Image (cartoon, rainbow, N blue to C red):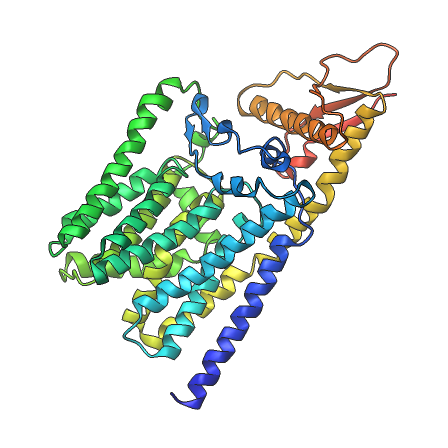
Amino acid sequence: MKRAHKISIIAVLLVFAAYLFCLVFFIVYKAQWTYGDDHQFLVSTAIGKPIPAWVGTQPEIGRFWPLGQLDYDLLLWVPADYKCLAHFILSAFSFVALALLVIGGVMATLKEYTLPVRVWVAVLTAMMLTASVYYVFVYLVFAERVMTVLIAATFILFLMLYRTDKWGYALGGLLCAAYLVFCKEIMFGTMAVLALFMLIMDRKATATQKAAWYALLAIAGIYIGIYLGCIYPRIQHVYNDERPKFEIFNILWYMMLRLKMWYPALLVALIRCYAIIIKKDREHLLYDAFLLAGFTYMLAMAVLRFQYDYYYFPALAFVAIPTAYYLVYYFKEWGSIAILALMCCFSCYSLPTVIREQINHRVTTYPMMERYYQLHAAGYTLVWEKKDLSGWDDTLCGYHKFIHITWINYFYGLSGKPMSFEFENTPPEGAKWAKFSFERADDKPIEQQVRVEIMN
């Protein structure tokens, strides 16, 4: 290997190590529970109890993703003083695992290329993906955190299955896929599309490979069977009844603007459609299957009108490694490196904002909630103002109320005086009290949508 190539490999690895260190540092920096869905940890892993069933199984609104946060139960043994930090350390390990899996996956797909090209493309792809999905690692509540890691692992295991035809890789890939299916409702459909594509298109598949795809279809069937039998009949209303107001095209356009990684993925997807349909190219069907799975996941989320970008992060994990391979395949070494470097710049642009906002949440939530606990402990009656709300506004109001109740009970537990705090509905006569009122404001952080007034 030429000296210049060695220097370039060392340089890019050093830059990536510094990049990874900085992002891991800010995952654990000032670790603290934040306002919002973190309340579910305050009644479970934060006090040494398993994640409750209602977190991922809510039949009344059609939600069923029971494994989305199950890995946090691994932290039940951690001492109470380190519970919160341990959650963020686990998230940091997941982040590093994602980066390493992507690098390993890209290196494996580009085995016929020179080492400098493989390293540069692998590192740039890992940076592009990790920067795009960083949001779900600095917050604790998102199932997409573990899903992105498992998708990368699933790709590598199925890739090894096709190279070795060994049952061990098939079993490992199926276990990852089975876990994924129970992490988000639409994943069963994505996995079914992936399996059907391979069964229909790959006429050269071995018995082991076919068995793996049939097993994946069976896993998807088991999920939908459970959902239709146990969840669907109990649905009372949709999750967020404002979602039907959003237009599918507008959501997709917004995701393209927010997640620049879709640009190279869409480019190679169009090229592959031409190659498969017109040129009858069947050389890299596994890569094509994962590309199709990513776009299937994205379209399904848009059809369901989920408008936040983190819902689409698993789709990015599906397409990341195949996109990197096809960029090198069609645009050669320097063209692919230039495209990936540009996408990395776009993807990293939002990182300072994500970090700044999360640190602000970490340093403001705890003292704010502690103040409300101290008010109640000092003898104030806390009253939640009843307003005539309907639809999603009423749901949000109840959500904020439950968050405050959970936090105040959490502080009572920390004080050694556990109790079942509840807000009062009406102010008391001749006593100190504080009024909590919900006012929806979509342009403000959620913790600023509850106004608190000390009445006397």
